[in-house]
Length: 268
Image (cartoon, rainbow, N blue to C red):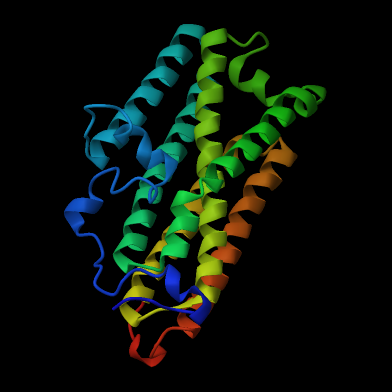
């Protein structure tokens, strides 16, 4: 059953004959350009590359983790290895969550304006860049004035070039996931307020919202490394609470506006 958007957005909805993508289609990284996360589009943009989600995730984790462990061993950065591994786990788990969110959204076959806003706008990249620049500003301007700078703790008093490069790359990956979490939660709330859905669609979208909430909670794995860095600690915990709050509001509104809401008797 197609979504029943508000009257002024009726032209933006899909034709009623369209159907949600099947499991085989959603098990590939790039269902269709313009309706994917930037992360999903990367591999599909490379000529001759056609790999499954699991292989892409395995490659992501293996390359980053191998780099962390090799450089930590070579330069004697034991503390950096533990923190780097945690960051790689967060980034890779974030990739898993992004793919799960996109699957649930596509299965619900929501109105085109929401799909375009979520996948086609690339706003999650902009938010990721803002988060990354804010992080760099803290690490290289604010934090050096403290008694125990985070960069010194992780990379030593004279950070090696290769280790610094990999650290910044992994941090960018984490910031991109954070930007995606922000955008997924905000877009979900807009969607829940703007459109009405059938019980089946509501269940799928609620699953997507719960994945988004879990997506935010993943960042708490970084908290043990930030306890002596109040600004970053507050930023990470505040991000998680904000995503959880907005996503909870989205779920409440989504269920309250569902067509025949009394027909939904099971949890998402």
